[in-house]
Image 1 (cartoon, rainbow, N blue to C red):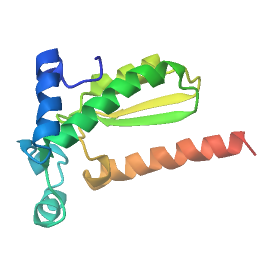
Image 2: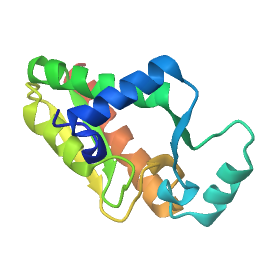
Image 3: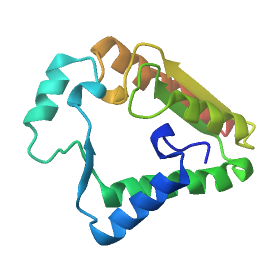
Image 4: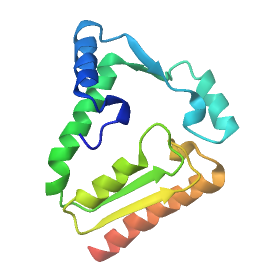
Length: 150
């Protein structure tokens, strides 16, 4: 259970999430403040005003995230495809340690881990300078692999 949020490390809490998801799948377990995603105040305001966006984490969503973490632990040691992992160093939603672990245990020989030290969870909605850096890193990573294969 290395990839699971520390709050869900205990098997008792995992059982509670599973029960809640089965009995009350739409019950809100927690709400994440918009400010956890970005330092860009304009992006936070846009996000807050978006009627289609919700920061509520319902029990069914929590269960699916729990399952994804469990599956990643099984799959990543056999994963051989090239991949890039991008993570905000100031992300309080997902642990940067989980990204480091995925990078460490993945069998792939072509793997890249980029940590943007001051950034939060939502890299593509961060401050413009960091957003550009993120997209540039993705473009460069893809270009390098396309050149290798041509």
